[in-house]
Amino acid sequence: MIVLTPTAVTKVTEFMAENDAADQGLRVAVLPGGCSGFQYSLNIEDAPEGDDDVLDVEGVRVFVDPFSAQYLEGVEVDYVSTMMGSGFAFRNPNAAGGCGCGSSFTV
Image (cartoon, rainbow, N blue to C red; front, side, top):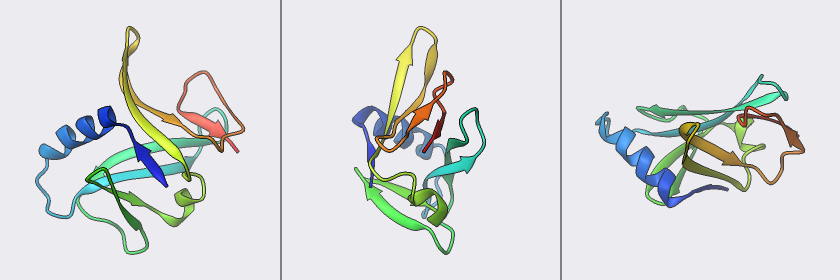
């Protein structure tokens, strides 16, 4: 469902090491908003919600809520560093369009 690149796994693991909750994981979510209608959200959370899908992606626990799951099929999450800055980037094969900010999309 979701792919984390090796660079993204390394960064997420570093962030998770700062918080030592036993059930913690990476929440990957799609929220209404942004320039194009939807935007991505990443958070380290202590535990999943009751209706979350809990995935093991390259050794990282990933939490996905039912609303977000429909938009995240085949999404690749990477961590990139450029002269403009560093951060997580999303490649969504299902997105029909996006905007210049790189963090919002339309379906």
